[in-house]
Length: 285
Length: 326
Image 1 (cartoon, helix red, strand yellow):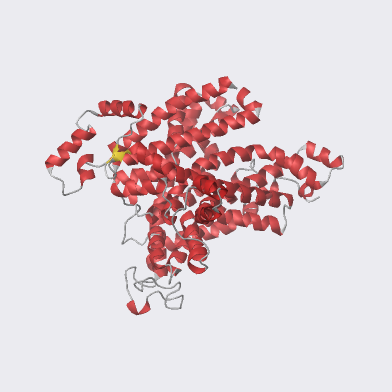
Image 2 (cartoon, each protein chain N blue to C red):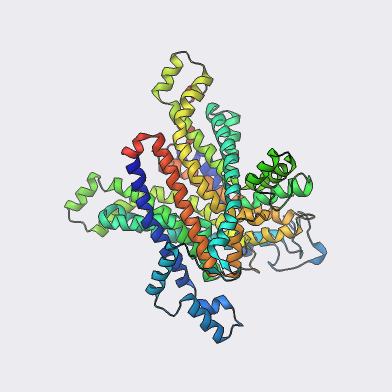
């Protein structure tokens, strides 16, 4: 397993990017070179230098510092929403897949209804009525994200419940709780972890999109999306602000996507990686 | 086939009912009294009471839900408070622009995605494959609003080739003008449409290219491909006639599903490029907390989404008999 992990480029590159950003975000006060709000009007829109690694904004505030504090907000919301959505979706999927019948019918129809709305519009509508803020943005994203887990876990459960070891557990008198959470759930964890990793990328994009539109976590918090939107005001002469914050979002999302792709190859051998799918010779003729 | 269509249409009804309940449920999420939230802090108690009465907020929630159901069933989505027009009228005025943008984006995404997918699959393992898949990975990771801004920076601000915001004449009208000897109108419409459509379609292009590549590689392993080769058919013939045709099925379904996603994704693109569609309307409604308009937009998007998915499924069933019989 370790050998396969080390030779998986997506996994290693994605893992490195994700881990770096996570560490920068957690230890932001350690890595910050300036105060988040510390202004330096003589150095407005400065380019990268030793003093300011990636330059400054329109108030001469250090962009490196603001970006790693922005990472804190994005990652907090992403982790909060993805973990909660995965938990809710998993319980729904387990119940629907295992019990079947009207429980399955009811739960899946509800899932379909939520899945039927365009994600961003549903999330925006929820934040519109509840008001902005870290928790409200996270709740909006949970409402959007849980459906995917419900569907995938239900499909996995449908397969797993027919396995011999489940029949054996039933014969031994195991309760449904024990079967669901001790027998089925551990074997369904692979797809859940893959989905959740890819979901982190989606959550970062969605959170930034909401901040970009002005409905996310409100300023003065240095969110990436808001900085990007704010930067467009100076785009004609100083596009740097928008470019840097966009890059921060893209690198983070790229990291989670690569990590998710790599994990899929590693944890879900039935879905072999793209490069493993067909014998090379057949296509190269 | 007719039985299948009827069954699917019937299934749409509980779905629509559920969507109405969710849309109605938005009201319950408002902290405090919706009427005072809507009117803001300066409202007098009298104004609040009148709005409460108008919105039916004094009734118990199940009566409100029943009334909402009845109204929606008659095509009445309420009044937009800030635009002083029926919600349905406001939505219909904007729908055309969004559909135009989404169709253009889907066309671009399909052409780019399918081309790159075929290129990558037929040259698996080569630098072309790597380059195509790198593009796909970037396309999936790049936020649409950032791509939009970068495009604007390059083509509108720096090069000055394309207009940065706004919409020309609707494409259908512009086509008519072009046919009557005024091609400038059409060119202007296309120039306005190009950047938003690319920004909106890039993500779908990336996803479609990955899917086409995977689907083609899967088909490449089939016995009939080996047979085709051993019959002495040329590679191009096998690739396009045998492999691509069979790889097309999952691609068609994903392209259809992307259309719904593009309609929803238009929110960001329309906001950046000042495109006067449903997405921009959504943002306006949300910033003004125009509640009935928000509900109307959400419900319309959901229903359009469901209808598009239905059409895709039906098309799929028409192509592949296994679907409707299974």
